[in-house]
Image (tube, rainbow, N blue to C red):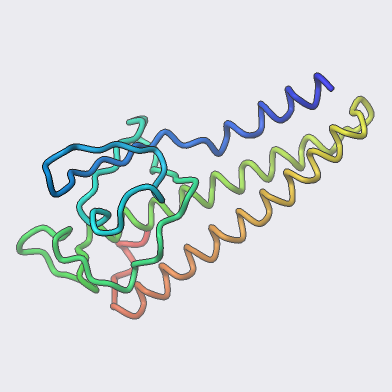
Length: 166
């Protein structure tokens, strides 16, 4: 039982997120939450994401509703060419974040497969827990791949140059 607990504790921090969402309401009150779903919809466009500044792209356990098709001219720098309402910096950031999320999910999946190579010292409950986590990780990889594919389709539709897509 202790091994199962240790295994679960080692696996789940891989998907942890340290993002904090900040917004200011109509009365001027600054609000904070770690759950994107708790940010009122009318403040989501103006909210700020504060995460751990380790240079990695941000991850969120709750994915915001897709707004890739909606132009966001307020994100663009003045004088820059826009593609679908977003400039080069925003497209690069979106592709970097999507690629990072996919790599992270694939690394977690690979680690789980590696743990299943030697099941000789593993209890049945540990094995079943890893199998269950493996299914979750596989669906996460598929979701991240769909997200990246959707971003590529949107970029194609708006004529975003390939060098913005890293």
